Image (tube, one colour):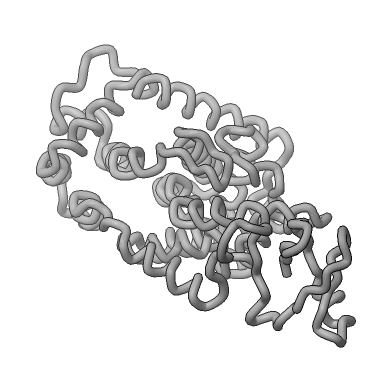
Length: 337
C-alpha cells in the first residue's frame, strides 16, 4: 500500500507484512509520526500530497475507467483486417492484397514510403502498391502494412513512462526485428507472427500512461522499495499491467489469438506453459531493453527468463547478434521515414 502523509507530504510504502502485523489498523508516518488509517487490501486509503486536491480514483472504479478507455480507442483500420484474411487464403494473389491496401490512400502512401526506405535496398523507386507486392512478396508487404497502421499510434510522447516522442515506436521496431530474427533461426514458421506481436507488444502503455503520470508520487514510492519492478507497480496501483491492457486492445482490434497471448504473456512467459511465440516475444523484448532503445523508465528491470533461454537455446553470442540486427533495423527504418 502507498500512503502520502497528510501532515508532511511524505510518500511511503507499507508492506503486506506490516499490514498483517498492524492490528490497530493505523500506520505512523516515518517522517513526522502522523497516524494514517490503512483500510483494507481491497480498498486502500489513497491520498495525494498535502494541499494537492482529491486523490485519483482507485480499485474497481479505476479498472472500469481503464477498460472504458480501451473501448474508446478507434478500431484497427479495416484494410489491416482484410489483409490478414487474404494472407490466410491460399487462393489470394499479390494483386488481391495490393487492391485492398489501395482502398486506404493514407495507409497506401505510408506503405510506399516504407518500401522505398534504404532498409529494403531497391535501387529503382517503387511507384505503386502493385509494384511493391511484386517486389516484396505478400508477407513482407503485410509487414509494411502493419508498420503503416501502427506507426503514427506509437510515435507520441509517454510522460508517465518517461518516454520521449518516438521512443515507444523505436522500442517496438527493435522488439519486432529481434523477434523475427530469433524466430527465423529457431522457429522459422513463426517469423511473421513474431514480427507483428513484437510491434504491438507494448501498446497497452498508450492507455496506462496518463494514469501513471497522474500517480507519479505513488509510483516513485512503490519503486523505492528493493526488488520491485515497474510491472508490479502497475498491477498494484492501477489493477492492470500494460501487457494485460495490450491484450484487451488486441481483442478490440481483432488481432489473432496466438499473437494476443504472446503480447499478454511477454513479461511472464512460463505462466502459459511452453509456447514458442510467447517465448520468442519475451526474449526479443528483453534483448531490445538491453540495447537501451526507447526503453523509458522501466527499461532495465527485465531479463530473459532462464526457462526461455534453455527452451530457445539462446546463448550470450546469440543475444549480441540479435541485438545488432535490431539496432540496424531501427536505425535504417527511422532514418528513412
